[in-house]
Length: 244
Image (tube, rainbow, N blue to C red; front, side, top):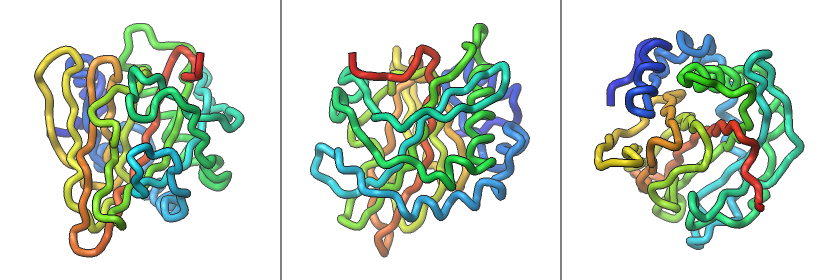
C-alpha cells in the first residue's frame, strides 16, 4: 500500500478513501514527533498484563488502557479517571456488551511528553480532515501485545469490524519473530479493499471508522515465539461509549 508524503496528502487520501498509511519517515513531518522520540516508550510493552476477557479461551493478548479528552482549539489533553472499556455488540460481536476493566497505562507512560503529544497531534490530524471538526475528542488509547507463545495470536479475534468511533489510529510499535499479521481495510459500503502488512515501527494506519471495516490476520511464530506490539488510539466526538 502506498504511503502518504505530507499532511495535504493525508487530508486528500482520508477524504477520498477513508484511510491512509503514514510511514515512519513521514511521521515527524506530519506530527512534529520523530520515531526516535517515541522509542523510549517501547520497553513499556514488555510489561503488559494478560487480557482476562478473551472469549475464545486464548492467552495470546496483553494490554493496558487509558482515556483522555482533547480540547482541539486549545491543543490540551486532559486525563480521565480510569474507566472500563465498553463496546456495543453491534460493533464487537465477540466482546461487546460487557465492561472490560483493563489495567491502566502506567503513570510513567501516561505522563510522557512524547506519548501525550503524539495523541494530540494525531487528534489534530483527524480533525483537519473534516469540514466541521468537533470541539473535543473523547480518546481511548490501548497498548496491545499479541504473542505466539501458544502458537497462534489473533490481533482482531472479533474479525473484520468497526469500532463505533470517528477515527482509529493503528500504530505498529514492534514486530519480531512472527509471520502473518496482514492488515485488511475494506469499504464499509462496497466491495473494494486493500491488504498489506505493517512492518516498520511507528507506521500509522489512520482509519475513518464510519467508512471502512478493518481487521488484522492471525500471527504465527517465525522460528522462536514472537510478538506484535501496537498502540491503538480511538477518537470519538460524542462522548465515550458506555452501557446504556
